[in-house]
Amino acid sequence: MVTIKTISEETGLSISIISRYLNGHNVREKNKILIDKAIKKTGYVPNDFARNLRVEQTKCIGVITPEFNSLFTTTILNAVDNVMTKQGYSLILSNCHGDKNYELTCAKTLIQKRVDALLILPLSNCQEISELAKANNIPVLVFDQYVKNENIDYVVFDNKGASYRAAEILVSYGHKNIAMISGPQTIFTARKRAKGFLSYFEKNGASLNVDSVLYCKEFDAESAYKTAMECLSKPDHPTALFSSSFDLTIGVLKAINELHLRIPEDISLIAFDSLPIYEILNPKLWTIDQPLELIGKTIANNLLALINEKKLSSGKIDVVKYSIIEGESIKKLWRTK
Image (cartoon, rainbow, N blue to C red):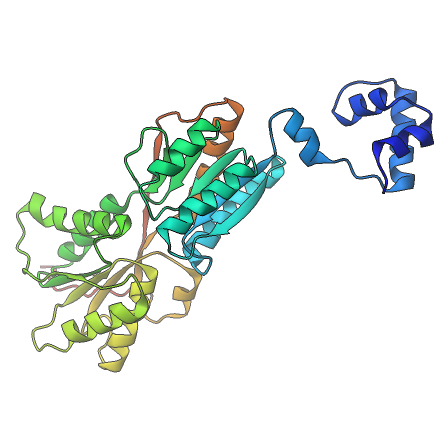
């Protein structure tokens, strides 16, 4: 095994001089040339992990998510990784498989590995995790959720504002019989989106049917398909739908196709998320765009700030704004005079 002692024997220099050079300190130019030449000849790889421990850094970020099969999550983490890699950091990913108890186990394991920070898409309120992290001087950042913990920083999307805007757009096109396909209210994002949708009607005094928000049992395509089939099979079904996530939209589109309904002639649709797969649809959907790359970059920059400033928390809640991508999936029910 090639060690720093091997480099010492190869160059005739002391281990302390070589160590100084490997840790970024200045050494004489002739010694630098000797060390570089020896490293190239022997294939020596510096032990970054051990060196970082000496300066109380591992250059690793622990990431905990409920699953790895979410396009939303993987796209964001890819953007996080792109920024962190350039700063010399690596991500250690942990999948808690939708289990709150295992989420805590994952956190304990990552803390034992002495990660420099924890990034979590949480299932729990993170109370125990934040206490453990604080005891070990490890900052915690949560994304896409808010769990009311002053020891944690957050990066969230403007779910409420985006859903408010979706309702506003449908009403502006003359629709009155409008329904929202929502995820279960046990999920933070689903609650915020339903609240934003309803708040438009509350604020503007517009009429809304009692069953205008249709809550799916799960935040997935199959649950949305069943909900949409039941809703759209009725003779007096809504003239417009707001589908509040990509997975839910897949289920809604399946129901629309099976019922032989046309978009926008028979049913208007505006959907959450704007993903490349939508580009193959005809007509083009109106969508709410979550800028996943921007969310990832915001997360990474906030993590770097916490680490570099040696803060466990800055009390920061970063809210990333949405944009609307216009399509052809909403029918005008009013006529211009």
